[in-house]
Amino acid sequence: MERKNREIQYDYLRVIAVIAIIMVHSIPAQAANDTQQLFSAVLMPVLLSFVGIYFMLSGLFILDDGTENILRFYKNRFRTIVIPFGFYTGIYYFYYNVYLGQEKPGFFPHIKAWLFGWLTETTPMAPHMWFMYVILGLYLCAPFLSRMLKAMTDHELRIFLVMILIIQTLFVYLQPLGVLPGEFFQYMIFKGWLIYFVLGYSLKRLYQNTRYFPFLAAGLTGFALTMIQKFFTPGFTPGIHDLAPTMIAMASAVFLFFEQYGTVSFPGFTNACGLISRHSYGMYLIHYLVLGQVSAAIIEKTWIRHFYVPKIICLTVLTFFISLVIAWLLDETVMKLLKRIPKLIWKRENDR
Image (cartoon, rainbow, N blue to C red; front, side, top):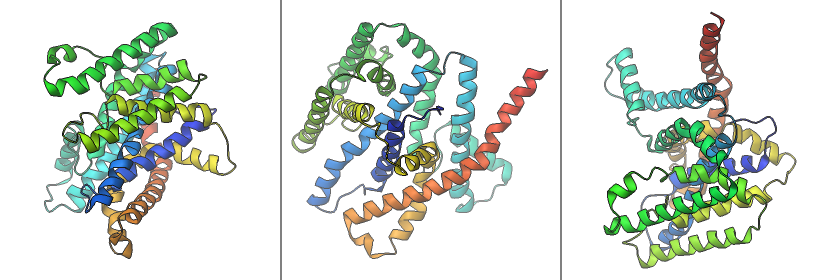
């Protein structure tokens, strides 16, 4: 959600988050030696904490403001989220199934196949799109969840947070052992990625001006426990990179660091981060295609391909800037046009 007075700490977070996600996808799935394995094991939890931070940023803005008129909220989300999402899935579909495809079934069969893939989460070569289906589900609940959270006192909200975090912890660690009844967790609705969504709003409301050290300690402890799990109990690491309490602690520590200390402005740099932040949604959607089909092809033709860390860094940097250019071009042209169409339709309906 855009705000007239931009809060620069969130611009910083978005920029770092998109870099982190690109780097996650730039790291090879398999390590060739122990040094590469150690590098990946240490870096991956830090980078993946920004997936949770993406959800936290969404919850922070949406649960706090903008859901008063429910129909208007849904219309705005359709224009700003659903339309770009559908457009970018179309880019993936037509690149892989039309441009690179062997079969040429015709225009309308392709449109049908694209829509089917979009609606069923089977868009080709776009595994990162899972995030969008989750966030759309959370947006459907947001107007009602916002009203519930705002009706709570701060004390009640703290109790609510403790309750959902305890339940999530029990589920993460006890269910794989067969200890936690499945029916119990099935009907506990406040779980999964929704926790990060709620945390974004709750952490700012409750802890924006409190001492940061306890959260720093919790984040460092979460990181240390993650490393212990990876190296000493590699056969038992449930939720280690997403919904485990260790990861939630790390994401919360990073989020609150920027909440409390990220308001420092740097001439030029802050403006650049604001520009990147405004186009970070498009960058996220397109980066996987850019990484796999452009950046990787370029890097594989250079000497950098032989060096593990330089290759990861170069892939990340190249993908970041190419994705930024593409997102900026599309946001300022095609996206502006597509987003105007629903507004014109709704305006004509209101004028009748």
